[in-house]
Image (cartoon, rainbow, N blue to C red; front, side, top):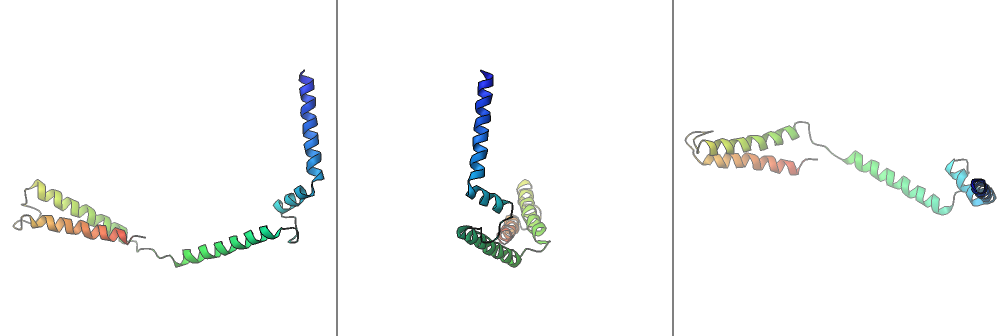
Length: 127
């Protein structure tokens, strides 16, 4: 029984290989994939796709060249402003308005929130 199954498998493999060899379209595709084909063998639709892809690549490269980045100091500055502002507000609450600047009491909250607001606005310009 196993021999019969092996025989059927070999027949199926053989018939598949014969069909591939008989099909000229398969040979064209195979040549295109191996880049052995001339430009005449490439269908017009594939040519259009390749041209579109080249145009897209050019546009992407131009867009990357035009992209501007922030200076190296930008991220540390806005991160520091956010952290310092938060620490300022926490110190104000822990000391009941006595510190970080004694004498101005709850205006310390405004200073802390102002520092955080500046840091937050800087994050919107981050590229």
